[in-house]
Length: 485
Ligand code: NDP
Image 1: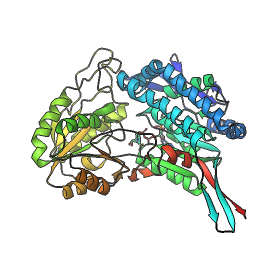
Image 2: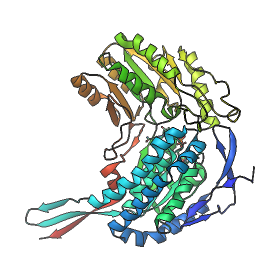
Image 3: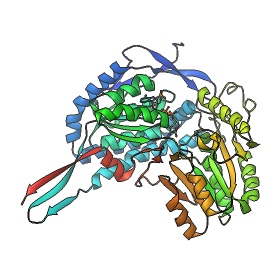
Image 4: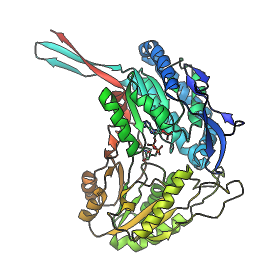
């Protein structure tokens, strides 16, 4: 293990500290395949320390006037905006995503998350129920205590702040664990929280692996609320750990999202939207539409225009301003994509574009984890390539003959996170949206995100909803106070 690399530290009780065990993991830059920093390989002792800090901070923080909590969170949002360039660069280096994407999507969204929940808590309402002449009830929503927040590597600061902001806005304290693959922006956020005046112990970040840090968080009896975003297999483990302790759990899991294009769609808009929904962040967005279905009468035209547009996406060094396709996050993820390309071939698929590792982009990126946007046709709808989440720059494309058939295709999958429907027929849009079993259905758009809407998945894509009022409710305990008249 190299020791001369910059070392990230845990953030516990307002201080940056070494992991108790003194162990570190190399943090690899995906674009180069080389370690460039080190991340604590923490364990349950560090989680225990964070629990003590969070427990100690809870009393004051939960009683702080809402307006005071709001001001601190708004300052965090402002500081994220002030440091956009630094954070975007860090996110790009850590994940392999294009710098422009981090600058225009990830970091602004992290600031919006803080601002949204900082102001949402100023406008909450509570229910009252009058029981005839007998009693008057009102609902008191109180913070639940310590929240455990576990997030993945694909949108590191975006997703972690989506959990931290509502959790602490309503008065909880939090222990967060970013993915060990992409820890840097979480580390930088801690400095900003300190600068914003967030009291010690309100937010604690413990870095390390799922088994050594994630599992102790989910198993800790004092961490009573768990918000998890990640893969479905890990989500099952989290659910198993939380069930016997009756924790309140939100699980945002994997997806295999259908993207349906009817022949009556505005094809130009559908093609532009589909290029984005297929390959944004190298296909590593849980909401990416990895199964493209096109009505047969438009199939030929769609495919040729789609391929032409995809082939023009500029792959390159993530730090190059012009790059539209960066690196895959890790060697493991790259190998997974390659595995599915081979599997698709065995399953009868024809590679229309991409499918094999590209020539080195430049000397710096010679050993990086790059794979080109890949489009595969002629696969049966029910094959493994069409059913299993790949989470990379690989989409399948399949023709269909009518509405009934494509609804069946869309729902023939154990996931149910999101879908897109492209049509100019309003009645059809309503009909299809109603029957597709996904938590979000986009009509004539993709990744339009209003932070007030409920967000989450059906089937194997998760349990519970986050976003807006749903998040405020999730992170609070509703108590009924019943007063006799
Ligand atoms: P993982 O499920 O592998 O990991 C998610 C997080 O859980 C990581 O921080 C990981 O730690 C941690 N973890 C691993 N094992 C455990 C455990 N036993 N107990 C508690 N925590 C654990 O997902 P990926 O990081 O690979 O992310 C990709 C997945 O996330 C995809 O399936 C994608 O669809 C999904 N996702 C879902 C979204 C949604 O909103 N529904 C949004 C974005 C992504 P570490 O990896 O550091 O060891």
